[in-house]
Image 1: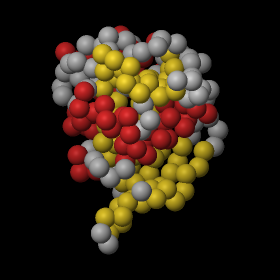
Image 2 (image 1 turned 90 degrees about the vertical axis):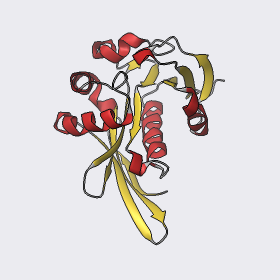
Image 3 (image 1 turned 90 degrees about the horizontal axis):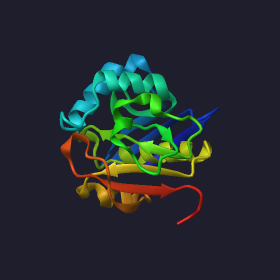
Image 4 (image 1 turned 180 degrees about the vertical axis):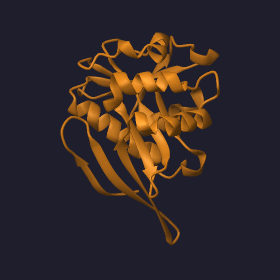
Length: 193
């Protein structure tokens, strides 16, 4: 992945173009902020990337955009189609509680901990650096905002991917979202272990 142009201007506004080299062809995507006008597309991506019992509903995504839209990034292809997304609220809790998924009003803009609720990438774009670019933009914004750490929950088969992104496994999560077993992972931004 070659990041040709990544710029930050004010707050956590991230814009970036990335080029993926696959053989002789080049695939490009950008990282950008999203808003309510993207809601239908975001809902469709979420439905592809998560089982129904775990996927955020259109209403939940709309509430998140209203409450913490500045913490909702998307990857878009050359045609402006959303191919991936990442979002999460800020809190002072050490880990994600299931209530956070349903109640966007729990967001605390000055919270010390940035959560990741979902890192979604459409199947055709997986393994091409999109998830890494989204996570990097998100964690850079969290660092810029003065967050102490980024925390997420994931399924066991994804632990290695998040470790590759610099996260540390904390253990089994208290979350039982969607009836699944989850694991807490943290990325410290303050230099502590």
